[in-house]
Image (tube, rainbow, N blue to C red; front, top):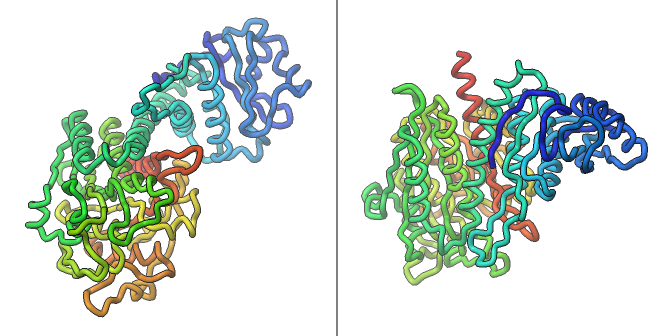
Length: 502
């Protein structure tokens, strides 16, 4: 989809569909007022008749508006009460508009939703959210269907309408950011939606090389199992033993900052299919375990977006990639393995494999001398019990870093919620036979998983994002979401902005 910015009044610009907002009970937005005046009161008339809904997220399509309106259609989007119109309401309105336009016959549209006031948010942010909503509405994963039927008239062009030329530069910046973040989200969604027989560890490595080809600021390194063995990555390799697909440790470096600046390191769990291993999962919904590499997908999507925006930051993405399958050579409950850090781990449950591949990747991250490290993983079902499917679980050994991520999540409308860590939880990992067990019992599963990872991150500032509840949807809307790419990109853009201000 092509995105652009147009300057001019809503009634004077030609378009197949112009999108404007209306508040309850009958308050028109500035662009809607101009259209109402140009159409000799048509919108006011429809509002009084009750033919235009004003509840937040309602949409009404007005065909062939009368008078001097240049657009062929007007899409009026309900925004609810003005006093309640916050970031959440804005995103709801933007999403409703995107779905309505995508479902209609217009192949291009002009949106004036970014003119609406949202307290605490800039024009660039509002433009970015419209782009993300439009991408989400248009997204379809049908590349593996032999009879895929694309929309007859898909939306191909979306312009952001700006009445004041002085705002055009900021709007273009928002569109640029939105385009890059949306592309990163789409990449992450596609990788998550691909089946495990296609999206293998080798396929993820190929994707990293594909991203590298897009920018001369990127370089890629892929470690094979023999190299991992030399490094002592016994925890990661213990998970890979049950699979015929060789494990890969993928690192993707983006050098956009000053030489010598310490990088932000993102580590993404890349279990391309998780059967649970010998601790086999129940068969129901096991197909969804292809989504167990969504942490890796989000890292690759974020690196691609950062490179597209040419962010002035040094960034490293690390993806430990493997399958977790049962086999005669697979790890067994009770096995003890030695991690790259030298610490020994008693594997009490082979389905707690994500932390085993992450711990070696987190140790590997030390060689990049990181400013901070953030890992992203579909790690625990306990996180879904705690937070449902709305917020990412966040745990950290540094509160300043945690606060940065929480703020980024709020600003990106991709929220996280912080859970505690502490010695009382860490004690649940005690083992009679090794330095630690890989599970901590029934209670506080998300926290004890983070405490396990915390034993490998003592030498740097670190945060853990448990995305088990937000990485994909089940049921009728089954599919990857691309989260938390928006959160991660906001986090990086905030850091770049802070660096410019310092």
